[in-house]
Length: 43
Ligand SMILES: [Zn+2]
Image (cartoon, rainbow, N blue to C red):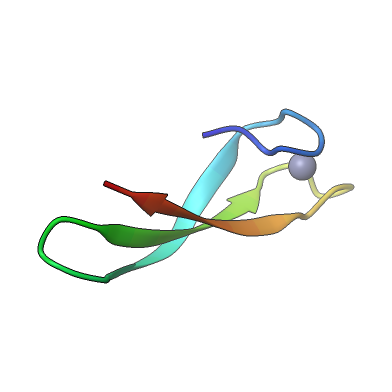
């Protein structure tokens, strides 16, 4: 997964199960000048 702002690599910081088939994943951009955090639903 890449940061939607700066296209740098983003790392999964945390994740939680929404159901047996879906997970919500919390990403943080590895670029310290950006620092964007975002979530993604992984099916
Ligand atoms: Zn970024």
